[in-house]
Amino acid sequence: MNDKEMKTLRISDEIHRKLTATVETLMAQTGKMQTYQDAIEAMLNRSVILPPELLAEIENFIETNKHFGYTTREEFGFQQLQRPLKFDRNPVCPRHTPLGLPILQPN
View: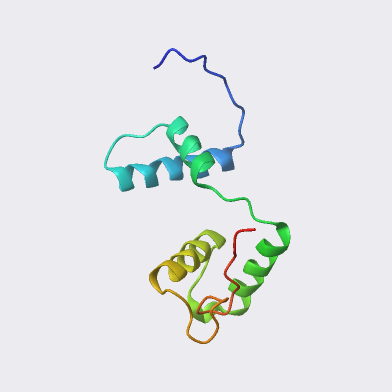
């Protein structure tokens, strides 16, 4: 433990389950032991807060396009974010990903 003051958080069983899964994922990625604090830090440092409208659009896409194999928003987001990085631009439309979703441009 370090010299920083520690705090106690109350979380539901469901959130505890998800946090534990995140710790396990981090351990698989790094090959090292991880703590709940490591998981929370990773989520805070790596996460992106999306507008509710975009989340609803993603959920609708997943539901109506099951043939693409997406089951969660996270899986969808991970795959879609990789596409513009792997392929410079969609040759059909440079402002959209291969599935037709807009590529977000910085303001």
